[in-house]
Amino acid sequence: MNPANHMGFIVASYAAAVAVVGVLVAWVTLDYRTQRSRLADLEMRGVTRRSAPARSERSIEQAKEEA
Amino acid sequence: MAIADLANPTRFLKFANRTIPWLSGLTVIVFAYGIDQAMLAPDDYQQGATVKIMFLHVPSAWLGMLGWGVMSVAALGTLVWRHPLADVAAKAAAPIGAAFTLLCLVTGSLWGRPEWGTYWVWDARLTSELVLLLLYLGVIALWRTVEDPSRAARAAAILTLVGAVDLPIIKFSVDWWNTLHQGSSVFRVGGSTIDSSILVPLFIMAAAFTLLFFTLHLAAMRNEILRRRVRTLRLMQASAVS
Image 1: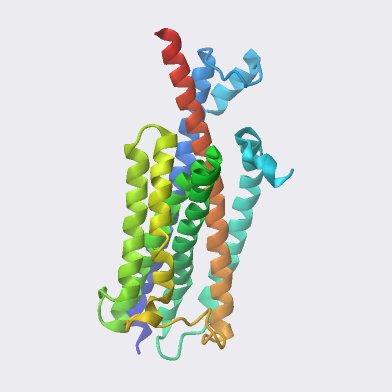
Image 2: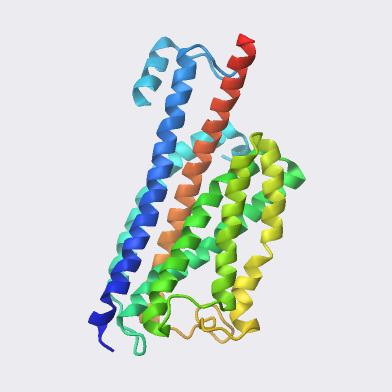
């Protein structure tokens, strides 16, 4: 068995794994940023949960910057 | 912090925020070690270098099934205890489990071509694995179709528990039917048939993939909790305007 003949299949498998893991990590990271940004936007407009602790202007600014 | 405390979404978010960076770091370290060991592992006496595909294919297959297992437990939490965090866990696990099932099918296909001479055959193991992917896609579609999360959760939970029948079929398909896919070689009565020089790197890669699964799952659950908060706030805003 000549390993060189099959190197393409091995490389393709590892490339597929990198692609799938990359897409998953990107999806989770971008989704987190999106939700944080939406929450910060709502809080800036004064829409907050009743159970949420009162936030100072400084913490709202900080949340906006982080988002 | 007691396990029961994590049932509270706010406490769960604090736990996730603290845990995710550590889990991510540990995942990277175990992956680096696992890939190093996998590359140093000797070629198989029959399959040659293509055995390196096994270090991706087998953990992906396990995690595809683990994902559905997590969803099945969460489905019980939804239907029996009606706990919203169970809905969140199930919804967050579906895309991750689907991705690993897809990776299992792709790497299996790329492994099959040099070993069997074909990318695909409709044998019981391959077909039941494809059914698992279709079930994942069905559940994801269901979550996206029903707008109310609690209604979607109940429908998805029922489909998940029905779909759990596929897990033993995947596991035992190679025993129940004649398949081109090889029989069990890791977890079997009488011990593994794989030499330790290949088995140890396989277990390290499986540990790395499992850590990755739980890191991604925790992060996706955090996102889902935040998404529900956004939805609630928007509904509050809309009702205040009207």
